[in-house]
Length: 303
Image (cartoon, rainbow, N blue to C red; front, side):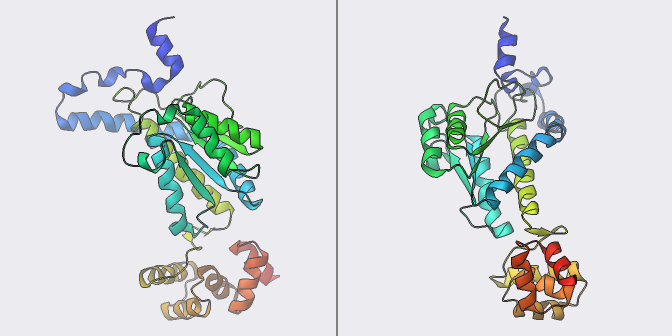
């Protein structure tokens, strides 16, 4: 087997991209042009794995509805992206912070700098999941190569617990992995060989954002294309919720403000109240019966 073939089997991200072999000789704008051209393949690569991504999102929804949680597991760039996505869900969709947990190889020390050998610590990955997950949960591993020991061991431990599992990778041929779903966005060689913070990292960011947003939509945290689960806990957020109510209902600002006040800052209850004409108490009750789904609550009130 040739060296090139061996590298290709191991991970495409480790290959050298012929288009950028003289990138260090180019003027800055040309460097940026080549990077931009490489970046353009990422959305298409993600688009080809949407069926697998949908399967993973549906499994995560089922886990959350069953009282479980979603765990992200990654090392290096993958882990930092996981931490970012999990952190942003709380203010964006008002989810309980324990719904999405991010596990980074090396722990918090690895958020801002590399921790030597952390990604190779298979036992740490397995231990992290054994100590924090259960069979009700869903575990999403992220590894550009598809073979990071910390991540793969965490997935294997999750499978032993009976949890649902998925792997996000940039390697279309990662080999046998302990995952129910493999989301392999083939982004090819990196502009700088092996620098998976580039195309592979961008693909992981797109996958994570799409995954978690789809989960939130399925769980009723979105109505139309509005973030309707947020609570108006300060002046800025109150202004944003009133704007959402105005756009979603077509009502005047004062009517939306009054509805939000009557609902105790609960945007969903105010929204159902304004759209259905039912009082706030009935609107909140209908939402509770509909498991937070605005359209279902409106349908029940109309019936």
